[in-house]
Amino acid sequence: MEYFDLLKSINGIELNDQQIKAASFDRGNALVLSTAGSGKTTVTTVRAGRLLYENKCGGKILTITFSKMAAGDMYNRFYTFFGDSHKNKTDFLTIHAFSYKIVRDFFRRKGVNFELLTNNYQVLSEILKSHYSNSYFNYVSDEEVENLSSSIGFINNMMIDPKEYKDYGIEIKGFDKIYEAYKTYKSQNQLIDFDDMLLYAHKILSNSSNQRENIKRQYEYVQIDEMQDTSKIQHEIIKLISDNNLFMVGDDDQAIYSFRGSYPDFMLDFKNIYRDGEIFYLDNNYRSDKNIVEGAKRFIEKNKKRYIKEINTTNKKENEINIIKVSSRSEQARYITEELRKINGETVGILFRYNISAMILANNLYENSINFYIKEDKSKFFSSPVLYDVLAFLSLALNPKDKSAFSRIYYKSYTYFTKGMCKIVTDSPRDDLTVFDILDNYKYFDYYVYDKIRQFKMDINYINKLRPNDAIRFIKLELEYINYLERMQDEGRNNLSNSLHILEILEEIGSYCSNIKEFTEKIENLQGVIKKASENIAANVTLTTIHSAKGLEYDQVYIVDNIDGEFPSDRKNMNAENYERLLEEERRIFYVGITRAKRKLNIIIPDRPSLFVNELLSANKSNC
Image (tube, rainbow, N blue to C red):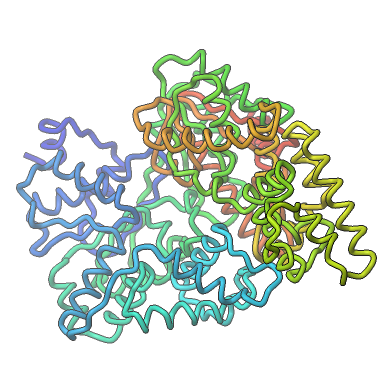
């Protein structure tokens, strides 16, 4: 029986002509360009089964993808389709798992012992603290550590000299020195992290022809899923072991991981890199309403650096794309809550560009007893330095003797108090005095300092008279906390837009509270709500970033916070070329969000409409 007939009769798998053509490719280099919802994973899995069924493969087939979940999904699909008859002939691995095997085996033969650094947070945190030890702003936040970790990963994956970091938009001052300090720490302690798996694997394969040939003999065929997510070093590793026999599947319109070093230019340059290569197209979206597919197609065609390709569907036009204008994020949350009350049994994805957007939504859903799942752990909000600063201001207002609160915020307002003044307070044996009295009793300041001490005391006391949301605005503006945040951004140590968003969230949460004590209790309670929601996998309503929703689908999708200057982000100090590159990726992110929707797509605007909303509206009008 013909293979594709067998699939249909035994497993009920019926491929269209494009899918059959791609899955029938035998040997050489091929690129399968797939649109969203076009069945690319099925094609990759079915091709592996065909090569084995038709005895085309004497060795094993290696299929590489870029997440454990995707590798597990492909493994499960393969064995659902074909059972365990080819159990020893296929491997579905992440690029890191594959590289780690090479490194582990090589070091074992050399008698080198090493340990895997699975979480580098604490190490990077200590290195950053040491780096900033002489700085006025010597506190290190989770956001800074994550930014550093991401920047190191980008440098490694793009195979860039760390000394050239400024040319690639990395704003961490002295990044090259921090990079070298981290590298030295790992070497001294015989540690390797996830990036090192790739760096060492590439070095081993580049320097050892025996190693390369062993892998080529082991894996006769190599397949790559999600090709658009491949970084430079990952692609170089794949080229070294593929023996000019590489089957790549991906969608250049869904390349959204440049912050991790993904390099979709390999797809766009396919014909230059693999001159004998063949290109196949999967252009039928099986997932979405035709209105969504056509709107998404016209929208993504705004990008210039992409393959020109058809994007079609046989699905009907049933629901227009719904664009909703509201006055604020809090009204956005209330609108969604009311809409969710009308939905029965359908899956709903509430998607956003940045994790922080979940907080107002989550709080509102909880207040209204809506069951939901948060795909990522949002505890980063609860460890935000902005949150801790606000709580410290409020704590000092409640208890002017709180030395710990004072030591956190003494330099973060208009006062510009010095480290020496903080030390006077923290070293004072007088726990019965307020921090202001301790400073006022000190006799050696210049006269104008006492005026600042007394004014600050009056302002801190005034906070007690305000409702929490008004108190937060007072801290931001009247105490000039916003000026401190701006200085931190100038230092390359935070993102002002994110910080202001956190303040906005705190104001919204504060609007539900009548006093500071109730506000702090609500923050603590919300942390428990978020933790519980992150375990609530069975809920029909999911809150997630667009990045984490990639590969998923929902009956209804709400894309929120479509605000001018936020999504896409502001140009800042970028030149025209770099901004155009950023804008095209941001447009792809929005496109990925759009194409998660099966039946209904809702775009919500809680402020001035973003560029992308206007482009989507314009594209739809031009089709009328």
